[in-house]
Length: 168
Image (tube, rainbow, N blue to C red; front, top):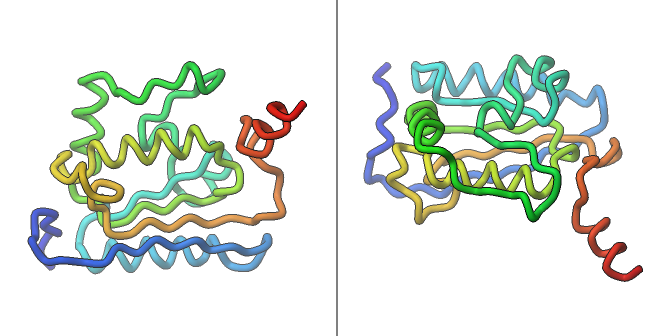
């Protein structure tokens, strides 16, 4: 099978999917199946990337942490958030995401809004050579997020914590 050509002018409707389920419901099996099928269809390993917010979760799905995969820097607060990548990190991410068709994020409930926002920004700026910055997620056709809504939330402040602190 030929390699995927991200410059194809064919219009598509991107798939944005959230899969929720309790422990043992088959989310990891679904991830492994999707990764195998996507890589087989496109004939390249870089067609799909899998990540999670922690090293343990990433190891369980044979992936990377979202921080490593998408060049997300850990910050102490929203005021420290820097969206711009260094030129060398930007070039590395452009090369890494060049042929990406799908990104799968496991344990979505553990993600803070700033980590997810930074990851989304970095994808949009660098996917497919950075040529589709005006498109959702830089033109990546498939984004799937999986998780258990009844697990512990992210330790970073999210909208609920910010709302409570503003009303105190």
